[in-house]
Length: 409
Image (cartoon, rainbow, N blue to C red):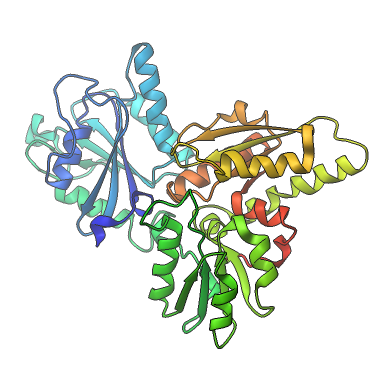
């Protein structure tokens, strides 16, 4: 069902503009329902509000209703910072301004900021019902004139959104990316190794597993699932070797030892890394581990390896949590007291100056983020001159099998 599409797989449409420009009213007019709180009082929207909706004929989207970027005071600065953070998640921006406003200097600066972030923009002049008919041009510098109050121009705006996300203009977002790429073909047999440990949600599969199964079925592959403990029995029960084995990255080494020679091997985290981000940047980034090992073997590193572990999820860490327990343990076993480790979760991510403190960033698969957000983090790391890699790539490297693992193209 479209209504059950995960937020991370929906087109993210950010609504930006000054306070009281009618951003929330515009969302309500576009969706035909009271999706956002509306008030004449400036500053009604505080933190960004994410609304998963169906926008006909685009399909499943997330509207992000943001605080006005002209907010004031200390609290206003915090709200503006949150709104700026939304830009890193936005696939398509709608820049809303009051049609009667004479000065658009603020909006031009905001437009430049969105363009610098490589975000496609539709400019909307709202409240055209307050203008005389003679003041409403058919178009002006590509702007769409609308009235969220009367509904005038809303159909034209929908058409502009449809055009912006059409096949020839589509933003680079999750729905346009295959998880498995060229790793499988029609009729392939694929074995999924899915440990159901303490971190697995009771009675459910985690999102990367579900998405992988769905794509394999859509591509007419045969799918068999097992746990790491049941791997040998699963392989023995098959009348031929699997064409591909997809495993949880945490048991890479164990699965590699048991896999048939002719079976390709990858992990859920690596699939997500390729679909959500830049797999080549992640592979290049993990070479820091080789450099650190060489320095350590030659008598010691000039300074400890400084590592940031970034987790998109905001769940409370559990025993044997991969990001807060397992990866730090592996790093300390490899480098002892010559490594320092910091961790961040959810939207907590250092700015460019903060990133410069680190030698390596190890990021999760990003299944809870959209592609734009992960690519923005990679771009921030590159701008800071800091290598970045992914959980799955890192774990394959530490298991000594990265060169034996298959990467999606």
